[in-house]
Amino acid sequence: MTTLSISADFDSGNIEVIDASSPAHIQLAMRPDTQSPHFQWFHFKADGLKIGEPHHFSLNNAGQSSYNQAWTGYNAVASYDHQDWFRVPSSFDGTALNFTLTPTHTHVYFAYFEPYSRERHDWLIQHAQENAGTQWLATGKTVEGRDITLLRKGDGAPGKRKIWIIAQQHPGEHMAEWFMEGVIERLQEQNDPVLNHLLDAADLYLVPHMNPDGSFHGHLRTNANGKDLNRCWQDCTEDASPEVFFVKQQMEKYGVDMFLDVHGDEEIPYVFTAACEGNPGYTSKQRELEALFRSRLSEITRDFQTRYGYPRSQPGQANMNLAANSVGEQFKCLSLTLEMPFKDNDDAPDLITGWSGKRSKQLAKDVLTTLSDMVSVLR
Ligand code: GEM
Ligand code: ZN
Image (cartoon, rainbow, N blue to C red; front, side, top):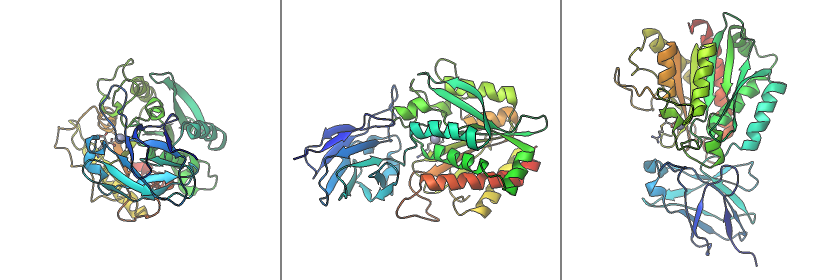
């Protein structure tokens, strides 16, 4: 007879086993990021399951996680083949996150969100060059020596607007690289007048993954040094956060006319943006462009809205260590943090998948349409 086993010793794996001796109560815990107390991401495989029998899983330390209020209304994702992911009804009892699966296979994967693998990242970078006409412009190195790839679509001709999109500074926010796959997929189109209008006026500077060390190690928020990359855009150093250091250097080299920083939010079940209203040098032009971006995107898709989001910063009170605030202040351009949910978009819920990789990709295509509409007024 087979025995139940739990493993997480793979790309973006994260779980510790407390007691897996009984399918009636498999007790697990999430492991904190390296040199950081943050945790919320999980990703593991369960083997030796009994088909047709209920298996009860508990993440015992959910109540102590970074965003412990976020578990209410959250459902774990699962997959038998690591390709098709579905939600498993979950409940939070104030201490543990609990879910039950009656499997149709002897093994299953669970994760906090549909993982974007290291393998797929490598494929995406290749595919972006071979099929989407992007150029590998520069390479940074992470703390552990992984590549930070900067791609450019366009020739860098003078007069072109420079639109930057970066993703997954927070390594557990895997929806962010799914979004980048959506960008790159649309760049493959040959007969797309809306896209061509954008590309006639602008070059796209793309960093599909800002924090590959963190993702590989199954982190929620930090790089291999325990640094939250979206909290070090003023005071980053080459030693502590080489990932941000590299991208800032490249931005200074090429310039920035629009910046989008792609994230996921644990709590809020909607897609939204955060902007630069709290910056000391906030301009009326920035205010107009933020409003235009938000209204255009919400006209195009139900997967974006403006009712829910973070509280607006008071004038002059922004945290300038956030990428969007820092870049907006330095380049006086439209600069946004885009947040997608870990849960679902409650304006258009999908009971099978919740928010997903596929929906993140579609949102990216709609963002490119919005940028095409706006490109002539960015400066
Ligand atoms: C956010 S901060 C995370 C906020 N999450 C919850 N649940 N309040 C992010 O990481 O996407 C943006 C940021 O970095 O400030
Ligand atoms: Zn984030």
